[in-house]
Length: 230
Ligand SMILES: Nc1nc2c(ncn2[C@@H]2O[C@H](COP(=O)(O)OP(=O)(O)O)[C@@H](O)[C@H]2O)c(=O)[nH]1
Ligand SMILES: [Mg+2]
Figure (cartoon, rainbow, N blue to C red):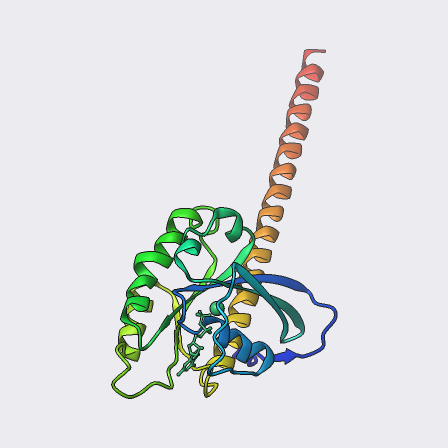
């Protein structure tokens, strides 16, 4: 059995092995900024809603076994202007977090109708292997305001082939596991890509050997035939 994977946060890391860009998207007011702030600064501001203008960045390092990933999280505004996320914005992305709020049905249906569609149309061809995860935000809401069940969220994620986490920035539920799992998946993707590149390089060098072998053979045949004509 492989040893268990260790993921930890490095609060003051200055060096890292890999830089990974993560973009967070979803309708306005779903709790994107608060989720990131809970993970990155361990703060939550109930009444202070500051609409994200354009894009904000946050950086944090996660250690996965002996390697350090610097996760650069791009927090986007979910308003109408930003729904037409451009190809340039997606460039270099390793993971996409799509957020809805459990008390907002439209934000849930928009995961498919807006955010996934946008990714499919603008980005999926170029980067099909990006890690995708859905955050069901504000999971602390359990009274009648909750209109999307965990099961509905899980079903949608399963249908799309995305990972799924219920999270609450307010009471911290699920936030750290979600980011740790993301760090782990990013590391797996990095390793898979490295393995693929190594296999491709090995394949190329085998091809080169094959060519030189056949050249040797050709030379041998030529010498033999010239010998025989003497
Ligand atoms: N109950 C609850 N409310 C939240 C939570 N996260 C955010 N909110 C509320 O939703 C508002 C919008 O959050 P924000 O993160 O700014 O949304 P964004 O527009 O998606 O970035 C906040 O002002 C909070 O009042 C949460 O985990 N639980
Ligand atoms: Mg925001």
